[in-house]
Length: 247
Image (tube, rainbow, N blue to C red; front, top):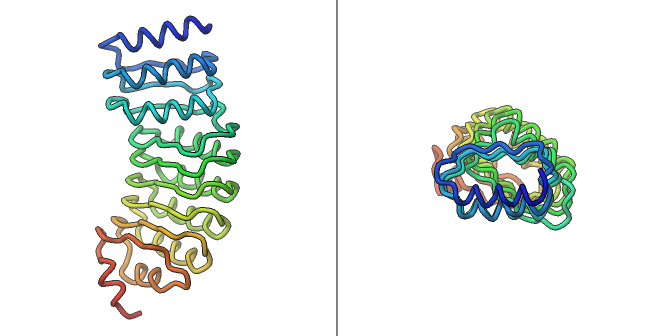
């Protein structure tokens, strides 16, 4: 698709009031056409599914897409896999929450994170991410040295995903904030985090409420050598009770 065709399509996308699904994968959209689509995405009120993988979209288009998603209130599925976000040198914050990325989308983001050297904030909340994505993100955290905040609220990482991320905390020395609220980590995932926090000294904020972890697991975290600010406010036990509990 040439430049004019891409821009014309973006304009038509804005004017259209019935289209709900659009697949533009493998169209070599590039920067200008990607930017045009992001601009129109801010205005569109009907599209729920947008496929943009294999389109050579780079850092500016990634940022534009993230900004557009803050304004768009209808899109539920967005695939930005296999683009050039991994090679960007400017993007520092990426918010892709509530987009149903799923396994493929989540793994694509994790793959990009392995090679990215500028991103400091990543929000992947409510994206139906399961244990395999948790493992992929854990692998990325072992290689990435810039990300400081990772938000994974309301996904489905489970105990396997939780254990993988806990293992990554042994190696990662830059992450300071981790939100694992509502991921069904369970007893095993919670215990793995406990073990990791005995070694990790950089994580300062940890939210893993609504994860069905045990009272003992939560108490141990409170009493680690360098305990993070812990949010368990909606779990079985409140912070107040934990702080006043004995081991």
